[in-house]
Image 1 (spheres, helix red, strand yellow):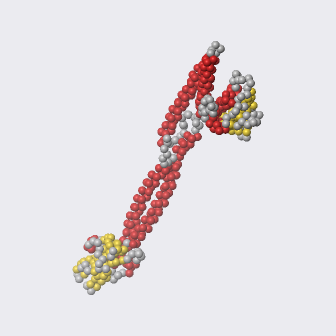
Image 2: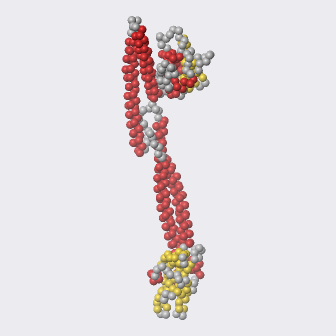
Image 3: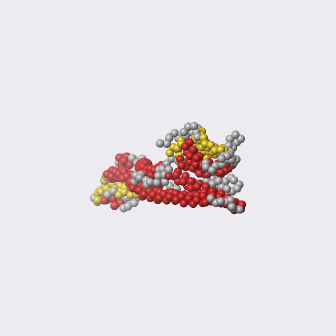
Length: 463
């Protein structure tokens, strides 16, 4: 039993989507770090520019350090409108000249002598970014360093980083969506040879047991090789089965025919009545065995022919006439009236002449054995787009309740236990294989009981 799993396309798409999502996640994370760094660089430059301007405003007047806040420094910092600014000016003695006296940089002030020092800190419970700049000067003849400390809240930085990250995320999402669509098309196109191979197998004639010659990619070559190997083994099995059926038909029919002939040669004139009854039973059983064996072999032949023979247009009149001649025995009761009536026009159906003839023979044989009393008729006629081969007899007929049962193998509606064999079953299978059906027509006061095969007509004629 074949288990159904998710399609190969879906499995590939899930794996590729996972890889793309993983890559997109890494790219977005990298974009977030880059956005933070870019925001820090941009606003650190503003912060440093303001600190340098403020340091240049430090002047010594009358031996004292004075500071004049330059407007341009706050204009520069004002570019970040959401942020608040804190500053502190420290003289050479470490005393606050002006600004917020509790503003302490995270590190030592002296570290700024080598260059501006940036740091992240928390001032008054608010995250801030600080810069410390030193300014060399001489106060009272003593050289020293004054310091400018500026702190700025980080709202504008976070906003810029979030905006850059959002834009990068949208860009990555659009690229991922386009990549998914492109991958879907590429995967679908790449898997097309699999669908082509399936179509080639589906459209292949069931009777064609030759190896496949379809061109496939390298990855599918082992699969096609396995299919061809299976087809080769199946063809060998079919050939062996055909040989077995042919041999069986010959080996079984020959001794049965000889046995029937030997039994018929027995002279029962000198036998006792009881021995005659036994001999009659042997004759009946021998006849039944021969008939059943022939039906079994014919059934196997019909199945084999539909599996191996190409259907072609056949004439219903000719097939039915040959079946009538083959089914009516020479030793038929002379009081039995049998007749054959062909259609006025040539009717052609798409089928196999031998199998269709066997089906009609079985209908006639059933009528002779189990139905006809004094009359049997075989007619070929047309009904719309259907061709009919009808076998009628004056017997009691089959009750409508039994019509669905009698087409089953070895079913019998008779009370004596004798099975009807395979006659209707063979005829029904042949009709179904030819896109037709086996039908019954009940007996009335004006018409006899009939069994008929209806088949769709074709316009083609045999070559």
